[in-house]
Length: 210
Image (cartoon, rainbow, N blue to C red):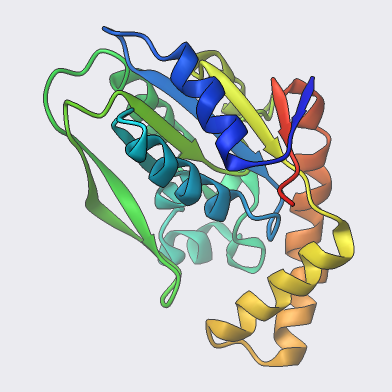
């Protein structure tokens, strides 16, 4: 497994591997707060400057509605593997490689912690689809169907203390008190992080942004 230190390194590798006919699907995995969304956004921006025609899609758009999580008794651990619509996510990934028209995908509104159906539009000319999410390499609960649909996988690694500090700050930014932010980061988020980190060895490359 190669360790990549910059978005430019990642972009160059993807550009070299991009195929002229079939789309290239790149998966970016990482624990909560590791920076996978930031890396994904920067990577798409860089690829687009290289004329690779990239689009970002987030697994977060497949969060189950909070009302459904309450019904299932899972609201207090939102973000765990079984709080997502894995079937819907897999269906999207299966559709993307050869789609000739525009494909729509859900986004996610962090202010209200709800998915926003149909808000991501993937035009037919997007040749590289960068998918970011926590469980792309998980091998249970239906998630094992995801990795075979990805052409390249990257695991974003960040020192634990820094990751948790950033995660707490993010929770506070979206309305949690400092106490609640720390409790969530060290509780449900950290339980998910431990599960996610066990999947790192399945990634093709590790990303350690400087």
